[in-house]
Image (cartoon, rainbow, N blue to C red; front, side):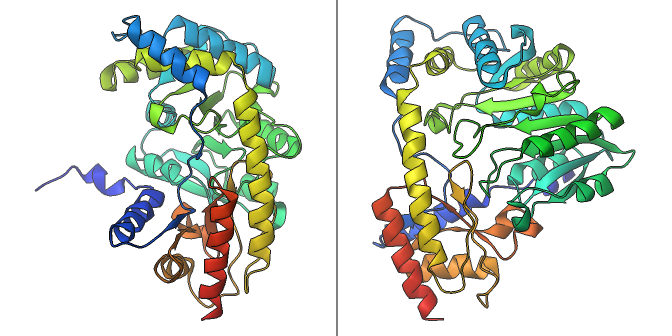
Length: 387
């Protein structure tokens, strides 16, 4: 069977591959602790579910405008103003089935073959995958533990060339839980303005932050016209299966992304968008409680990891991931993650699932109960003691 050459350039998410391995072990009767998948273990708040049910019973099951229903685009505008201090228009908003399409469509609309895109590494693997798929050159920006899982501005400056078309940032970050400081954001904005570079700002974890405040590059002077804000509902509102996201971008680009929506998905389900309106307008009590529970889990897992032989872990400031250093253990990250799954029945991810600079690290999600986290750490300890 002959496939298009471009398919060879398309990557994947290792988290789903590890999940499949873990499910196969469960089918054999093994009890697996899941610390691999980045999905809140909470139910979607009731008022959001009720909004979707009302929408279904009201017959809102038909086509909508490709860019999203007016009510949700208006709600996004209000949310961007409230949380980021930026005034935008509904014409700047495109609603999509999940946040990933914004990433895909923005890169597809802006990156020509040979254009360079700087992206965080270790970072969300789909960045690199989509850049390669469209024929761009993926340029990894090292994210460093000694910088609190941020970057060195000298490294960024050294990577920028005349072919640089876009810089991708993610704060708070998957897989590290690191955040970009105000000075980090200002440095990126200065480069983008000087060199006329687009910035794709992935802020899907913006509401899951434990220290300081979220800083959006869109709020920096001169950045509104060269920023694509990527956001969604999966993490903040425990809506992973609903598939609802949005992008905020200059109107001319929004029109192109809308055209890509027309050619691919037609539109996002109306009743799901109605649920999104309810999520953004509130109440926000349950999402706030979810963040506080994540904070408790973070403290437990970091303490436990630092007590394991050969493991050290810095405290993440956002998201719900830890990225422990395992360089003292005489195994590659991939070998170690496989060993932990098969020996300890705990599913974790190799840091290399997020790029070459993730070697020597693991990623664990603490979107699980404290009871399971403690049991998982105990199993990992016993497995490491056998080495």
